[in-house]
Length: 344
Image (cartoon, rainbow, N blue to C red; front, side, top):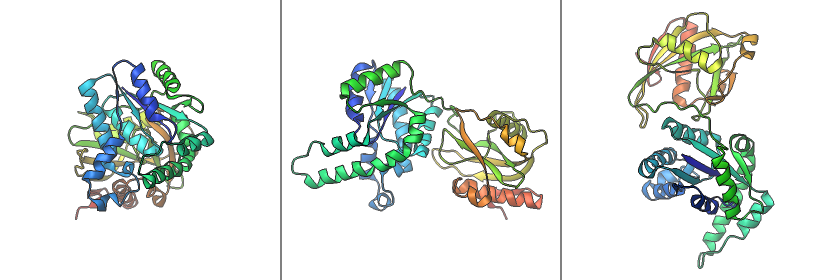
């Protein structure tokens, strides 16, 4: 299990985490910042210059999951992880990756008022002979207060909140340990199996009366998606699409699905790629759309979007697949794609 202590800089995550390790049996301190430090020494400077924070590196997010899994296989028990995560899509990617490996997470937010945070940041202990480094660190911490304010709405909805305004690290740790024992902050995220080979997946495009397409927002990975999922062994792809729509949206499709595109997705480690099918599931009336029911552990939202709006929500390979699926729908003829482009 992982106890993820979130919160902005200056709230006391690291010191509290070390105290928590003294209170929880079989617990180990796991600091993902060390992975970022390692990547800074290994990656070319050109690549590092392209990102403002090591969290923006896909390799960092992937290695956090892989390292946590490896540590738990080595020592078992609980990993206490102090790490600021302010971007919800990064939270989705990391927690979703852990869920796919059957690693439960308890998400706990340490929170303090901004005036307290500023006092703590300004009062940080100085490093002898490193005045420039101290100033840079303080600026970094202060610069993250505004993004933290912006992230509070989703953080407080997702995590168990513990106020640390006037608490010592030991007092905060006692509250964290009690919360962990009570199961507070448990992420009820769907545990999608981690693929071990190429897969076949069926997606279903559903449209409103203005021909906008329905997209869903998964809790377990970044970016939006089409309703659908992996075809199970021995299952017809059309039946998989109907099943996934029923599971994800709570509705039964009466009309048969019509194939729009077949797309071959190449392996992109750690993914294995495979065949991706998109079907036309027909139009939903306003009343049907109003009756959609989302599984809270899998999807947090849905919306109808235009093709242009979808470009801002879907990753490029899915958006290209959607574009050609819409062309196929207009023409009334399926299109064969490889890597999102028609095979000619």
